[in-house]
Amino acid sequence: MPVTVHTTHPAALKIFAILEKVNTLQPMKHDVEEFMVTQVTRLLDEVLPWQRGHGFRTAQIARRLGAAAGFASEILHHLTLASLLHDVGLLALPEQFTAHSECVDLESYAFIQCHPRVGAQWLEPFAFLKRASVIIAHHHERWDGSGYPYGIRGTFIPIEARVLAIADAFDAITVPGVEDPNLRDAVAHRIVRAAAGTQFDPHLVELCREACTCHFTGSDGCNTSVLGLDD
Image 1 (cartoon, rainbow, N blue to C red):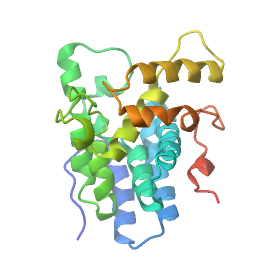
Image 2 (tube, rainbow, N blue to C red):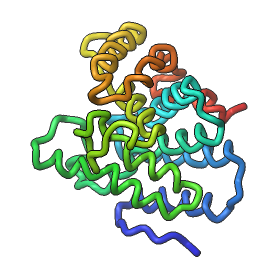
Image 3 (spheres, rainbow, N blue to C red):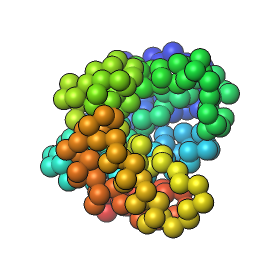
């Protein structure tokens, strides 16, 4: 039975058409699923140009960190899908919130806090994305319980979501005036380490230094070979 998703956003409709195609072709090899989902991530980049490449880079970092944490290949697969799609819920926001990355007021921030929950609700009906949808729902939760959208804490947060939280934040950190990627990484590591035990799982932060070093191919970070898609 076709999946019904309630949205009128043109890009969202294209995205769900691709996901429905993948869903109806199940069972499908994991590498093919990941390749198909990268097409969705490219569409997200078109709609959210201010964060172009973020989904790909986040997936690369999350996969490395998950491997360092000893995740099995099946778990790494679902983590990869979640990372590639983690911001899909932004398409539910009014256009003024998706057109740029400038800071927003508190009222607008309340809208933005809904995007993990909305994205998860959109993706959960697709059978091959059920686990990924859970990861996405919780990737803005915090270790100390002050995150969103549900305010859960510690090990109650799925471990894949804790990995995605670190990968998402690590890639999103910007250091004004710094063009050297190694220096940017060093600063980003210090910021992530400072948030260990409050925002992030402290054990996973300890694994972060090697896993989160960003040496990506291309200015947009869209090197799918790092995801194992070009093997």
